[in-house]
Figure 1: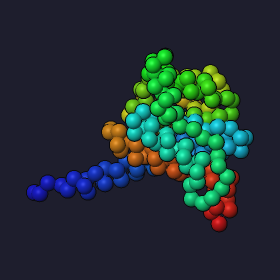
Figure 2 (figure 1 turned 135 degrees about the horizontal axis):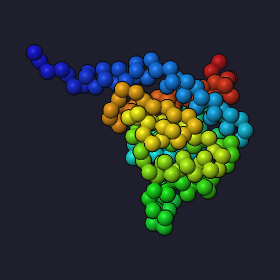
Figure 3 (figure 1 turned 30 degrees about the horizontal axis):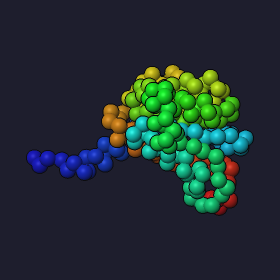
Figure 4 (figure 1 turned 180 degrees about the vertical axis):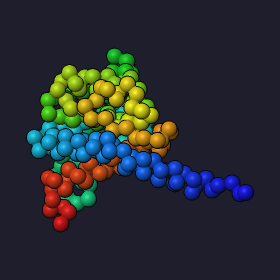
Length: 197
């Protein structure tokens, strides 16, 4: 028997992960709650914040730029920031330690009514956990895009969204970016319906 084509196998694994997500009502409910929280923040003139490490930082940046730029069609710019500026990160890491790089930014920007999207494929990233704790202290609603059972963040965030089935960061991140795009679309459909006519 010939070995399975690794390219096809990877697509099939990704498809199974998406199917498991769709079959889990808590996942769909979490995405809906995320969209509702983001829409309420935008309507109130609040700030959407995001953070993560490595590939999750890239997803956090992607989340922010879709709001300040545009998603599908032109509309007003929406306040959003990813905690990814190297000068801020290295300054905070140097002065306070790497575990505080995101929490300090939450302290600087966060206020009641804002939303923090905290992304961690393991749910165990110390700097993301500290950001979530800082957000809660400031009355900022927290959303966790997580994997591997949710880790320590599962019980800390207001809205946990845990990718099921997947055991590797790449498969988890593939679902995280889908969630981000779908939430932005849902918010736009509610607040800018003319973009979908």
